[in-house]
Image 1 (cartoon, helix red, strand yellow):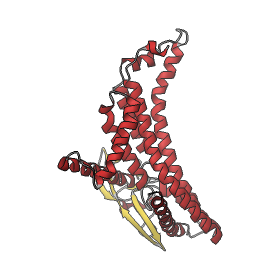
Image 2: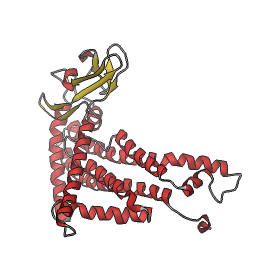
Image 3: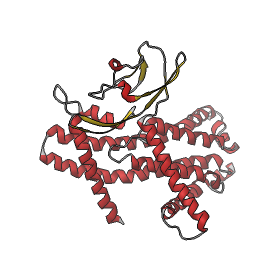
Image 4: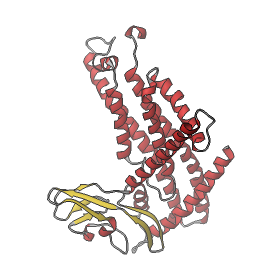
Length: 347
């Protein structure tokens, strides 16, 4: 199993390098010298109103995405992202405004008259979100149908893949971190794990969107955990926040402030940890690919290939570890909020 994993990882890394090399080589070409590699890397990890797959020569292979806007004086309007691009270079800018609306160099919508506008567009990350949700629903429903049809039998197909993970999350994360009340939160923890894990793995595919490396996505996941923790918090949980037992009266005002801030630092840590880990991995891989075209050396190319393959193997592990860590810490925070205990036990 380990050998198959390593072989697949190496093959995946070579495909990634070859795919990115073509795109990078074309992206580095400019009328005046070479484009800044930093701009190329940031373009590939940020969200966009189009899905750019590869550039071959001067041909851009992209998928235009729906642009949905709302303004109080115009209502909802629907466009295609290609309406706001230069047809030759596929670049956005104010000079390519359409119907008084433009997409700037940073992929932000705006109006030529300066009026406010709301963006409800289906961006690259939104499409990736739908794909991840569809995949998670597929494996979950397929596994459920297997047991509904066959009963408590040995799993086959998709069920054989899903069952060990479900048991692990239930027994090793939920039960051990939350305690007797764990069953109520298992569905959420399973959804969290499969969503993050799938998003992490699909994000490593060539040309894929950086879904779990988007801070808006990680912030949303962290805020959901924050709401679940505090909505289910019992009286002991809130007593520890606003009347910490065993603390001298003189220090109680300080402890209340510290505990209250802690309510927000926990989800903040969840948000930043996942965002940084996934985004950093993408940046490192693209940076090593960029070295080939910066130095234009065969020796650097061989070294870069080895490094990209090695980092890609690590990233496959990081994708799983980050899903596990986010789920584990969420379970621990929930466990601390619902735990029933006597304060005398601490003494």
